[in-house]
Amino acid sequence: MIIRQSQHFMSGYNGIVDAETYPEMLMDFGILMLDTGDEFVDRQPKERAFLLINGAVELEWDGSKAIIERGSCFDEAPSCLHVPSGVSVTLRGRKPHTELSVHRTENDQSFQPILFRPQDCQIREVGTGTMKEMATRTVRTVFDKSSRPQSNLVLGETVNLPGRWSGYPPHYHPQPEIYLYKFNPEKGFGYAELGDEVYKVKSNDVTLMTDGVSHPQVAAPGYVMYYLWVIRHLEGLPYTGPIFAPEHLWLNDKDATIWPDR
Image 1 (cartoon, rainbow, N blue to C red):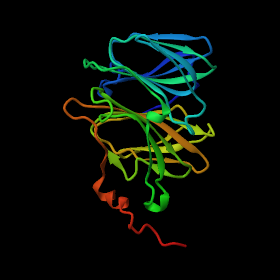
Image 2: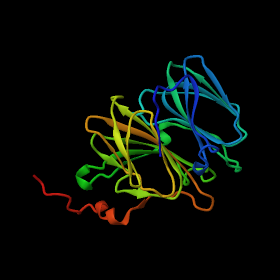
Image 3: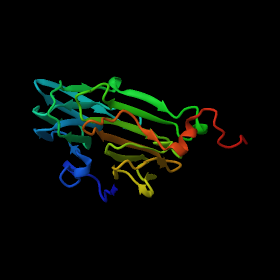
């Protein structure tokens, strides 16, 4: 399904998904907007991740303190604070219109808080050398099961060049997933397939994937599409990678003939 944003996010915490309203998602998701000097304290008894989309923020947690900045989610890798239940986090805005994504989920496991910096992200160019580069995109994984085995989340971002596809060949997985979209220029748009349904997506729209629906995406020509993604592991069934639709798996072959050169 799609959750559309009819206006810009307001100052403070903007809740979008919560596990009570959307129990099938098993997680909470929202956007925190801070101006210079604003303060937000999070003591939720859940595993949490705070990813900086743009701006600057001072973080304080568990006796530690740091300032992180980001000029553009399109051009720069993210910083993200990841903490277990029981750790209080204070966030203070250091620039106007600072924007963070906030992720929460139930998790009784204990692990060390960590501040992921841009250099800690796994950055891959996916799709190169296949399909005449029509599905080439940049994927930034902040953390997954291999780097945070006690976590119940997988968190990352994708930057989709104009006119190109991502999540392609069409793939699916049983674990629930959330996408948040942004476009450059901001008036841009793209299309998101959720199973047999197709939605036009714009900046700040959110899509929810459940029940193993396939979810390829495409950006309109002229517009760069960014989307933040978060996956919730299932008990006994953690996310370890996508399952490609078998009828389209041939597209991953570097020698596949797509169309003749002209």
